[in-house]
Image (tube, rainbow, N blue to C red; front, side, top):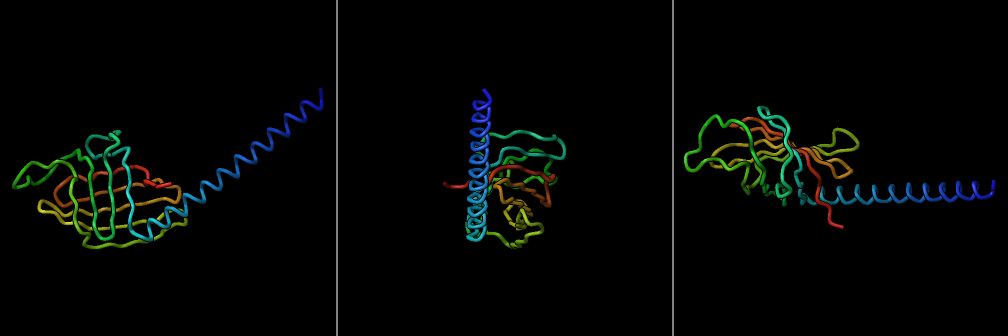
Length: 161
């Protein structure tokens, strides 16, 4: 009976070691993929949640994203809040545009994430995006503008396998 328990314990221990090794390998692959995407300045964050000043935190549908392709920022994000100045043409439909980045600053304030700050000007407003991408693929986005309430987003970096 003792040998059965020892055998079960050893099998469980070997399984746990293999699982830990697989997890470490997966984390290393993710970290390398994130570093490569940041170096190329070609990435996409799929947004899962937003936080607003007036309406609190909300889950969002999976079709919202923020994408950087070289020097072009493609923003397809929802907006809840107050606009302080009405646009001349049509009503605002969220933070939806594709524009060239005016200023781009990248830093690594801590060992586990990279921060990018970029400014974008559209016909209706000027936006300041602060994007933090963690080595594990998690991301946060903070958007400030001259004519709208600030809004924050959480999401995941889209990593191609």
